[in-house]
Image (cartoon, rainbow, N blue to C red):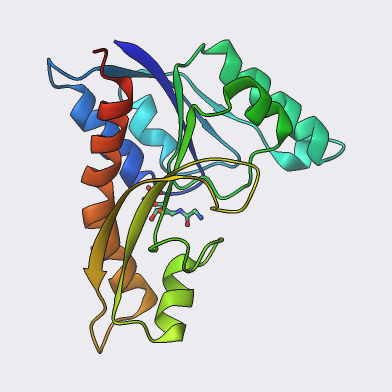
Length: 188
Ligand code: GAR
């Protein structure tokens, strides 16, 4: 099985979906480490399965460049074939791109190139779109500008709040992300 590292900042529902799918006998990947930039509650999903976790905080570093280096070193230690940003709310810097360029994917809760950035759900709702969704992309140096690998659509309902819409997006996002990660790690 190909080793993957998952980076998170939040509740880790996408991580949980990746871990659940990894239990299948035919799953081509294995989650070998989970790294967060804060005390993310989602780390519990990894700990429950005995998967090594690490927190790399920006505040523990003199500057962003130093944090970027520590993060890349922490990921490299796990020797992943693929790095998955699953609700990781920071941009990865040059050291990550140098080490893992073309092998980092990100999941985003909007139909890119619409509504990039940290508030994809809120921004789509505020704009009044009737259809939104999620995108799994390859990570490049821009903000959610990388090649689109997969997307799924979700209808916006009249009474949606950011939370209700995000919940329905996550329901389609999780299987989409699992699909892409399976595809990228499948050895032909
Ligand atoms: C996901 O919906 C993901 O697309 C989003 O954070 C959520 C994390 O949920 N990521 C971004 O907004 C990145 N800009 P989770 O912690 O439950 O997996």
